[in-house]
Amino acid sequence: MKVYVASSWRNDAQPGVVKALRSAGHQVYDFRNPHQNGSGFHWSDISPQWESWTPEKFIDGLENPLARKGFDSDFQALDWADAVVMVMPCGRSAHLELGYAAGRKKTTIIMVTEAEPELMYKMATHLVTSTQQMLAALQSKRETATGG
Image 1: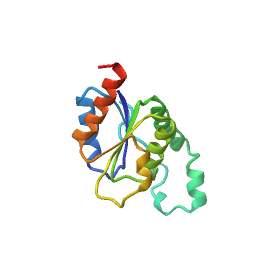
Image 2: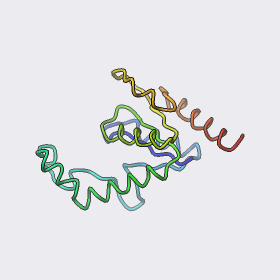
Image 3: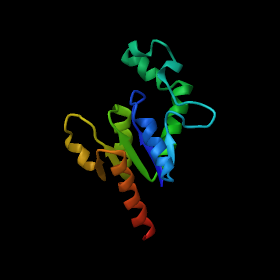
């Protein structure tokens, strides 16, 4: 399957999830390393002071060519993917990505960690607590799709 991994730059578990998916034979979009020749988008690429931007500066920043390129890369990968795995803890972007995928009727998996309960997580196809459970959920989807 083609899998988009949604998470946070601050999530230390994300690289291990990407590795496990690839080891299981899945094609994976990794926002940290979306292309062979470069790393993913960072707001700091636009400005070292990005964390102190006003709302107006933030809106302007979305139009920066680097932000547009990063958005286009991630959004195209969302459309490409058969499934989206959201690895918690994560932030707003990952939640938007999973919501978009759910709306597109893609397989969606949330790897739940210690967090405040969230009713709308019922939108996801699967809620899991480990990499092994996530791989099993994808495998069952793969078998259903191939009739095996």
